[in-house]
Image 1 (cartoon, rainbow, N blue to C red):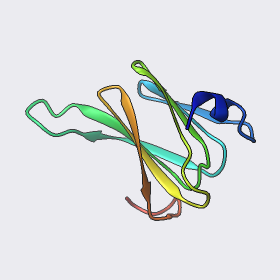
Image 2 (cartoon, one colour):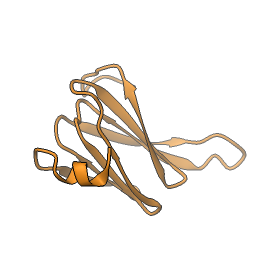
Image 3 (cartoon, one colour):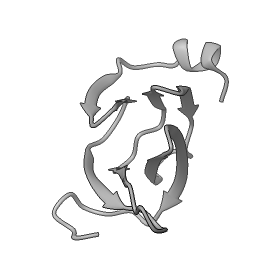
Length: 98
């Protein structure tokens, strides 16, 4: 999704800062944690899950990233080395353990 289209999208973004990133989403709920990475140093990276975000914006020290998951889809965003990556995941409830 392009930034201009994201800026014109419907709804007011809910903004949450977690670790060194800022997350915006328009619909649903989110939860975040830090996970250890892979390799000798195993640095921590941020992982956030969204129940049905429709539009996602992520700002990190390395840039701005926008995503548009399909409606009614849950998504997981990882921030690794300052870059945001988004994948679709099975729908979940906030009290689910993942």
